[in-house]
Image (cartoon, rainbow, N blue to C red; front, top):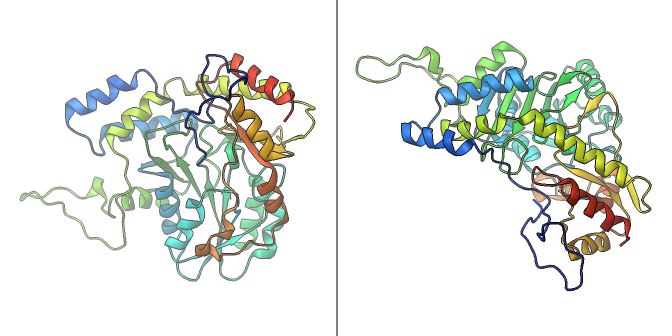
Length: 386
């Protein structure tokens, strides 16, 4: 992840409004969180309980997620989705390398092989046109990563999946609150995986959620997130032991009430925060329109990004980064393509758009603490050249 540590400003450089270095990310904590978390501490009931259930209920009611199971990380959500989907040794999962290593790492965890498809240069998302020719008899799933919070072309991906009888898993780590063709992300595919890690725009400190559309699969998710034991149907016997019989492998992936209390606090006002985030994005879009050396990412009218990142392509990227940092502004790549890792095959694939993306992508600050005045300063600094 990009470095967000404040750094000294260069002598003679412009100073950002407020005199502070402007980081790429900040962590949003609702002021009510202290009271909510303190109440959990006072109760001494810190593990999974009624607050986790309340958090799941609100994720469904307010963000449109279907059957959300709150988990301890987005990585756990990806791994559990693959397990519940029955993907294992000898299978293949098609995904784009423009993501964090967790996406492909979980594929390896279940014994399957990640098969990388190229991306759309103008979005960073998997290119549906590069999926079908990579399908083999071993292919069992397509993993669609919504890069930066911008939804993939889910209609085209679903059509390919239906044609070849494949599971669709959405890696929506960046995407709580995103919408595709009128439907919330979390209500579209077989499985959708969210992250509530610290710098995401909805955080539980660390956490995640897994949505499964099929009710039976959803029940399996809830059971296997806690060792494979069905809590609702495993009563305590007279000597104080739960009565259960494990028949598959489960995990300790559940969220706890301590984290859920923070998540519940941060859900308060979430839509208002997203409205403000969209306004900052619009301010960037208008202010950076027609700036020489910048190519903006594509944004289609049939979907709404969660806007976790604000990125574009830039010429002379290293000088761009140096110029902004000299003026107290963070600018950073957020993940090069992961297909060069030894674990995944150790060589760059023949993916022309991914290679171009690796050379020109850049991201600038977008977070809850950013003011309109600071965005104006960032825009002005960029327009002065690099």
